[in-house]
Image (cartoon, rainbow over all chains, first blue to last red; front, side, top):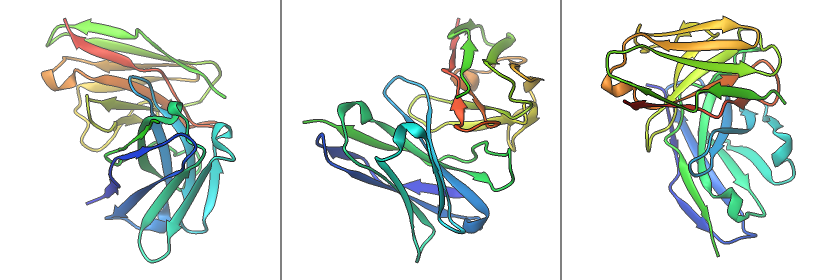
Length: 121
Length: 107
């Protein structure tokens, strides 16, 4: 059974960093991209970037460059999203999801359960 | 980036009725268009990809159509479990982008 299980909720102060994990199982880790998508309260979905576990290749959305880092744990099938210099506008639910490696097939299935990140002083 | 516009923002429909949701791109995305369903407090779930291919587990009452810049998601006969928010997503160009969503509510 394909699963993406994310870490628990976080509360951070402005200026701090947060690191969210996404543990995957049930599929060949290196055969997919892992994406991160965020959703601010009451808002739509916003793609942040992707990570390719086979070679650590990344694409970050232009809005996030300089503040976001995606990495993996070499001993487990876990991907991490780190977001730095947090501000109140970063309060959102962060989702990991996957897509296959074939070009033009970046539709997302399935999704992790989401991680709530709250930025507040 | 490609801007995806969904309409209407809110669609009020009675159970058993047909619902038609629209998604428009500001440039062609070919058939590289997906639809996701999101219920309150839950993660999104893939319904349709390739503009018209149902994902595993998607009921046949859901159908997608269109290509280029105009797409439609049709729910032929709304069931109680279909009241949710629906997002379209293009994956033809970077960055990947979503529409703002259509909330399907009970009339």
